Figure 1 (cartoon, rainbow over the protein chains, first blue to last red):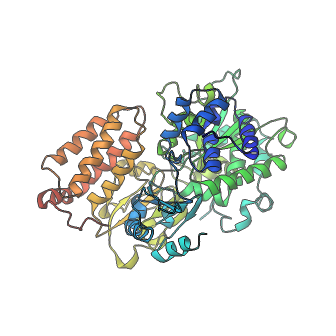
Figure 2 (cartoon, one colour):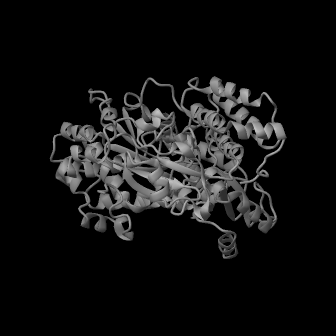
Figure 3 (tube, rainbow over the protein chains, first blue to last red):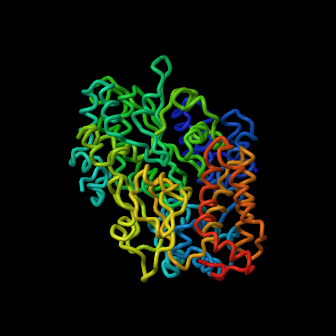
Length: 157
Length: 422
């Protein structure tokens, strides 16, 4: 399967290229763009970006696998990422991860059979004063309780 | 108390340029470009402004490391890769007062004759990156960025650049590699970034809070800023308090505020009548303190005397009833996950710390495990390119030194006395 940016994506890619003195600097933003357009960073997308930048696919893959935010496998429509670091743990994160697991019927690292939710445990999200916290796609949800988690997830189309 | 940063944080519209200017915003930049460049650097030096990213290096001195030779263009990189567990202050600045940062970086660039600045923000901060993008656009439209700023003939271009989830990218040379599109591997120093930094050019890397202090320093003078702090650290600090306290949050406080005062008065003490057990004072890497050690000033020197660090001033409050082995296991998971893998002592050491602390918590610890952990730490500290190995070893050592009995008990009883939970 071949991939290509949409017209808008291609335009954004060109805009990014002009922002940096070296084309390689576009690799991180380009991978964000890939994930936004295709949902995850597939092997085909890596070859595609490598072609656009005239670098080896291995160079792109080396970068893509170093950073945790790039999904090398498809994730659900909603990627629920719960912080498990110390401030969140002290405020009940372990308990809430258990609640999410039971509610969605999956363990951390898994995706629901309908493809709607992926549950992940992540390291510090930089929101320690409003712990516990989770990120659903790009959005932070803070001061979580079982009830507020239910309200957020049940409200998603 | 006089505040430098948070004065208008409560105003929802402060993040927009009109409101920011209504409170005198960008007047410091106007003043700066009427000053000789050296005089600006001198004010920052007089301000005794020490880097707010954790290391506490004097900002004015750092600026002085740029080569005198102007033949190569210079670069400013704003380190907005806030990721040290317990730290959430820069996010607050960027979401409430992005123009403080933009104005501060513009002044710094003018003073150092830098025409290109990058704000490297952690990838998870999508909302904050959007707010910064908008603030940067507003500043361009108002003539505070771009070509011929305020008719001075000075040009400055600013790009907001998102990371992609890697704690190590907060280490300044790793930030540079990541900005260049590489894996976030720290670089060997020397050469230091001031000589060879981003894209091979002389580069200054400053923390968000550090640069956001600069407009106030230019407006009110370095001496007045210095007077707000203590002898060796000028100004105020944003202190973050997290854990089960009455009022967790970000507070702007004098650099030498008393740590007990921060926890019990500013943050209101612990919730639900809980007692204090331990405090991690300056982000997860800094050695832990027992409850009886906190009647101390929270400045860089006082913390060092106590064998710990003020770090990023992210205070994590740990209540009685918390299993310290489990707490350490959480931290060791983190460092093992975030080690970039470049240096063997760190890659292997953080993995072994995770494994050994994990098995103690699981009731499978061995009698020699305490010795093994201390030996691992000894083989990690000071033996790697960057400080991540030390950042993992310091909490491990200090948890053992301060709460040894809990580790012994886990090993002796072959179970967690707290029932393997927080």
